[in-house]
Image (cartoon, rainbow, N blue to C red; front, side, top):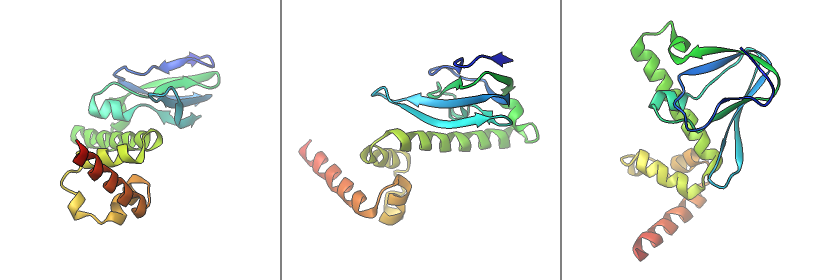
Length: 161
């Protein structure tokens, strides 16, 4: 399929069923945060495949917008074909893991440290007491000292509520 520069191949808020294999040209995947700021997630030149694995793996609407940065030739690839050599169970597990990683990267790009910490607590409620402050801080992309300040701020906020 030939697409001119500027074509949006995948808008936000859809449930995608396929990825795009780039034969020639260049695509970009990005999202727009609540403040209207664009965040580029990745570029896909010739030979790459790009798609929203978070949306396909978790059956949610996509946050990613995929657009052509150059006139491009792309092939549509149903998500089911991305893992042809695997059985269905392995394929679903792989897509969910890749989707979880994509969700994490998008979150790291667009949320505050406090929001990331609260996401960590809601995602892994049983792990906070089992992990060192250093490991949690590393997961959040902050220093252990910054995590201490976040915890103090959060405790102070819950006491006043």
